[in-house]
Length: 139
Image 1 (tube, one colour):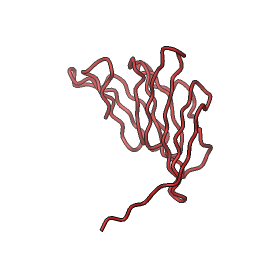
Image 2 (cartoon, one colour):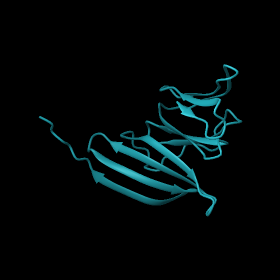
Image 3 (tube, one colour):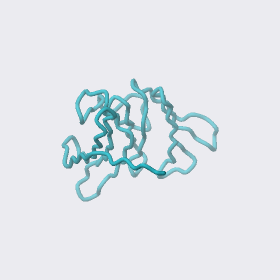
């Protein structure tokens, strides 16, 4: 669940099977529904609330307009079509200097325990880092 950044009476509710609902709490009704094709992992609004991004367990993210039920573009897979790389967190910040959306995607490959962090500006990958997970044993 995610609070709309400009309209406090609206919330974005995401369900694991891919359904997303923009809900108006004051009217107790759905404003818009969106249907993703993959299991939903994370959501993030654009700063002005006009669009949002959904991240999925197949390593894809999808851009949506809050006013349309269809995606703005086909799913994008920044890490390639590898099922082990779900994007489990996403943060979208719209910068006024470059007028480009920046999406921060955090992905983890379970089999090798390698963590990835990426920053995407427009359609270009501008930063990508990876590192091994550190495990701690508490006794």
